[in-house]
Length: 167
Image 1: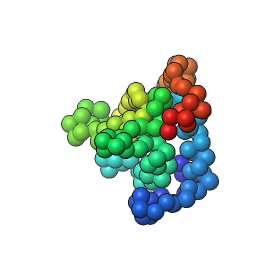
Image 2 (image 1 turned 120 degrees about the vertical axis):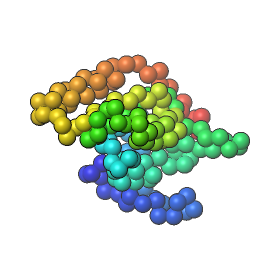
Image 3 (image 1 turned 135 degrees about the vertical axis):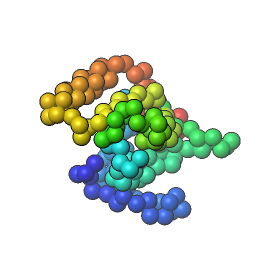
Image 4 (image 1 turned 180 degrees about the vertical axis):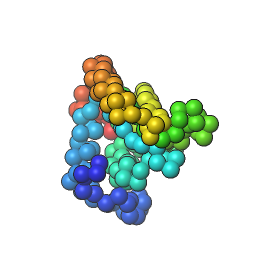
């Protein structure tokens, strides 16, 4: 995300449209074609970094990633995709459930699954600052293996043309 060029702020909320910058339009295009979506993020002050939050706010637009039905209930328009959330933190693993694991709740449940990306599995990399370079390298290799396994798993995703016809 750090290399994308976009305004982090949803300047007027949903009151008036805010044109997507080319990088965000491309991100939507890639999400449209994805079978599986993986988000890697650090736990940052009990949430996600502002850059990721801004990306979600701007890219996962109402009417594109989700909509509200007549009964007021949300409908995820990115249904048919699976996901994975990988969270790094300096805190020890045992600490996160005690404080509520808010990043997992926010990104997995309130963002990805809200938009229809499910099931979304969670991988935690805790106590990062206490790890050696060798342990971090092993985590990186393990994350690559996890990504390869996720990519190889069939998702049952409907063709994009079919998805577009249901929106």
